[in-house]
Length: 429
Length: 179
Image 1 (cartoon, each protein chain N blue to C red):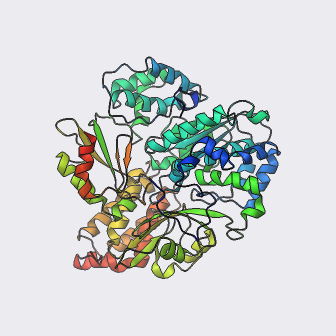
Image 2: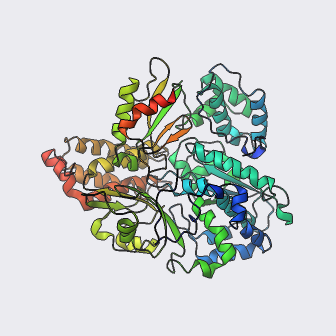
Image 3: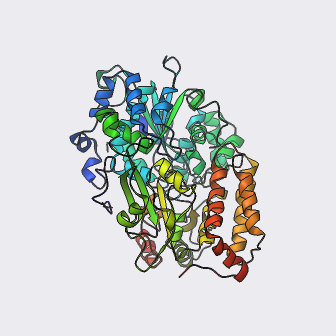
């Protein structure tokens, strides 16, 4: 499938070759300058590689936004114990589909980033933990990994540098929570993907009890560009706190849904209305969730902000994974929120009571409201359950599940009340 | 891609194929080679559990109690442990499924754009209910959470084949295409 939409206002660093079939194989990738960053990195001291990534200000693109270079610097430097890198390709945040495209079109961009990261943190084995549903992408990655071995970018004595690295593609088997980094580590170890209590953090005690760095696909794909061109070059885009470019996966009620890569100081409003073309003909937007279903919804009046981590936060939401979900006036907000909460109820691993019980109760109450059997007390009840779910569990899934409920009640209470009082819905069919 | 089996990819083969035999021997011949190769990629046997279960499902179509017991023996785990892990993950079928496992994405992106009608059409045409297998053993329709292709709603995955932009009116021709 051809890459659907491009826009001249994009800054296509990561997505430059999306849609180009020739860029997928290793020859095409090398022709496009692939693996020169790896050569440069292998000729540089590990700590200097970490330093340039630190200086670039690259932040984790999986959702948390933690500085990548800083994360790397937590790894032990003596190289005595076995240590690992895990590429988090468990992309499952509803509304997010950027990592899939990165791996589908530019698998070697991702693999090169993994090798550089592994070298920098002195890991001997790297795993790509990819969600099991991505069967077509697993095939692409498998082919790319074999190519990288054949050309000496993986295996023993990479490019004559004396550095050895193995890379294994590990497929998950259907569990959203495996995208949480310690859930991922448990899953990689052949366990249920139940998140672990932190500390210890993965850099101290990660996969198989050994120091491990877990980075998102997009984070790792950004690394070769930074290593090759330097931190200042990368900082030409974005803001002081949010340098660089980012892929936004835009879906829902939009004229041109798809992935768009923009500098992090780009306007959210322009992303929605110019790049994505706004809502379908004759429709008006109701709201936008800017960073995957785990972040608060913004109303159309709140879109006048930049897409940086701090910009979206000031507007009342989070950048998250960059999965933008647009909802127009045909949307029943109660139904949309119920659907998102059902997802979390299904994906709760069940370890912590507030999450296991809370997600299920939120779902039941929302279903009741949606079918017209709601009570006015249900609104404070939802908020009460939501507040008890936040900040009281091992991982943030519980918090995430409460977010769409709380934020939609704050901003779209009328829609709830229409269901509750009149058994009607404000959605314009 | 190279035809030669590479140790690095031995464990991670897309597993939901239409050709499968519930009584096929487990981990013999080429599968034995893959099994041994998987073990070389991890520091312990437990870590091979997910790839080995994927392979078992690839061979037999589902994960039966007997399969779990055999996997447990080979990986030096208990059958109860294997069940606890297998049952955690949605992709492991602990009951037999139809020859075509039709997975309709009902994540928020697809739901906003009409996934419900697509699901209903599949159920109507296959004469099944969610999760049931049709009388001829051909179809099992399930709703799955976000498949990660939200710009192309509705996303439908049949075994290991992904279909994007599926509309309710196209379901009939999609089903015909499978035969």
